[in-house]
Image 1 (cartoon, one colour):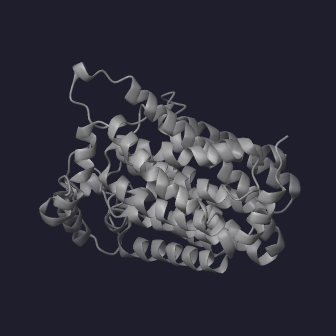
Image 2 (image 1 turned 90 degrees about the vertical axis):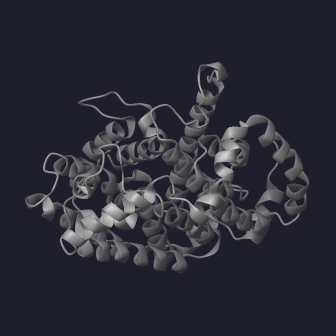
Image 3 (image 1 turned 135 degrees about the vertical axis):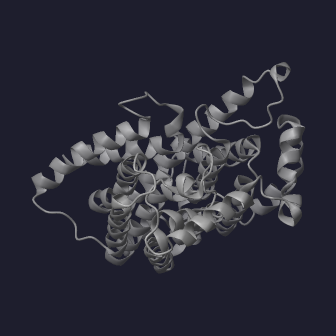
Length: 405
């Protein structure tokens, strides 16, 4: 039964990057929600059959505390129709922190989750390319392209998280198909980030690619020269493939930083701050940002910290900060290439949180779950972690042993 639950967990992780591109409507919801419900249905009997469950770690307790606190404003919420729905969604998103902790047995499981996460990112990238390929220039002035059903900013953020994972998996432990999947994602994912014309997504991509470069240079120092030689070809390809209007929007980052309103985000942040001042300790309730700030229904906070402050108050922010602090401490306790990958993923997440509401994303809690599992395994099974995520010298030895079939 645990094997079935773990298989469903991998399927769930695979669907997260592209979940909104396949929505079956009420009462089923998107593909990740369906996969998550099936996972939960299998997980509960598996734990009951074993007659035990793994003792929660600090991150699991903090996540539970954060969720329970978000449930408290249900009694005074400013959005009584929205809050129960948001709480149900939060449960479906946060449960992955417990499930990966419970069913993850070894470093190979961490690697398998990263494999399916990267495969899901490939699906998202392909769907973005399909949207771009289907565009008819004569039909309008579209300059932003994203997978069907998804917001371009969200697509860019999801794609950014795939870069460090792809770089990590290029360590000599993968078969040829896995190597091609990882190596091919780096250029494809970057082109797709550009196609979204997301300025915040582009900045997060720079952070992600910088961390990826650290991983790759440590393993393949000679590849730095080949990468430098390939830059002119890559730049020419991007210039030919990506519409000039799309690139111009990304190039406006400097102007926005100097004297822009960040695409009207400043007005949203001002309204959100005023809403926070009206209920600074307890907050207005989950999903109440728009109602509390008196914004249009289509608006979002565009900032994770402000969203938490408005919806859960200072109490929620303190708990959320505790989650981040514990996660960062856990990353530093993990050694080798896995630490570099997880640190890069956390840096990408923090960058994205400045201009996006990423606390409501399943990818956020999937990342935190992997950090917690990696920390536990580093304490209990350090040799296994080193075997699955070898140091650069070990990876080089493994690559020398690989032979074509």
